[in-house]
Image 1 (cartoon, rainbow, N blue to C red):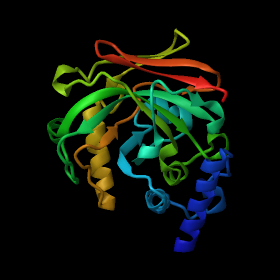
Image 2: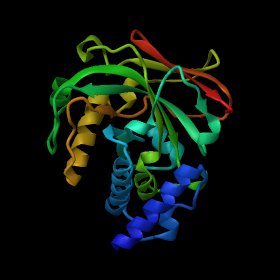
Image 3: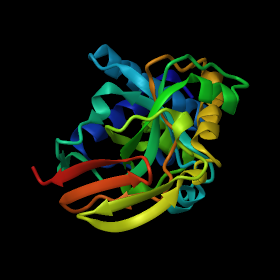
Image 4: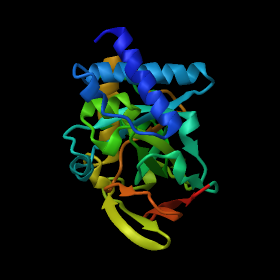
Amino acid sequence: MQTSELHDIASTLRRARADAEPVTAPTKTWPALDADSAFAVQRINTEAAVADGDRVVGYKLGNIAKVMQDAFGLDQPDYGYLLGSTFAYEGVPQERQRYIEPFVELEPAFILEHPLRGPHVTVADVINAVEYAVPAIEIIDSRVENWAIDLPDTLADNGSTGAVILGGTPRRVTDLSLSDTRGILHFNGRPVIEGNTRNILGNPFAATAWLCNRLATYDIAFEPGQVILPGSCLQAVPMNETGRWAGTFEGWGTVEFGVSTA
């Protein structure tokens, strides 16, 4: 695709995010958009955000679990940058009107002590690189109308990122059983859905290795201190009502946030 077209797609998605107004899927308007050109769009908007004072603080993997792929009609994972501006706090309610059609996910988050660079990163490399893990909630939100997305659409939209909330119970990964940890999502004290970290490509270390090796294609490496989101352990749940969400990993900890109308 021509550079001018990539910038047109980037500005269209940037306006949609700023206005919280959905747009037609980019692949409908620009049929030549593929995964690599979509990542170029993602990079354009990330560089624009950094130039405007934001910063890259990590990377995310999405739709790695089959339940997520089935829910959004995809057969491959998506991935994107994590920007500092997308991180929120447990004690600060999220305003529903800031989003278009948001969903809530529960997943572990890894904070790195050592760098990781693909290709050929292994699960052992990931375990050695992670300093600690915390429970996390990701709010995903597509700028594409009705979530009518193909893989290039969500990649151009930075993996449909909305917001990230990190919990306050850091643990060394050697103290966790991330190949078999049950996660439960509650809304207003009522259990909504549950899953298991084994849904994240067998375990989230494997998902992180996959992500690192995939992004090496674009000459991206993970740096110490960065946050890595390896994907949700359960199917995402619509965030339509005001109230309080809580995601709990059994034997580990809980991450919570509220939703308000203003």
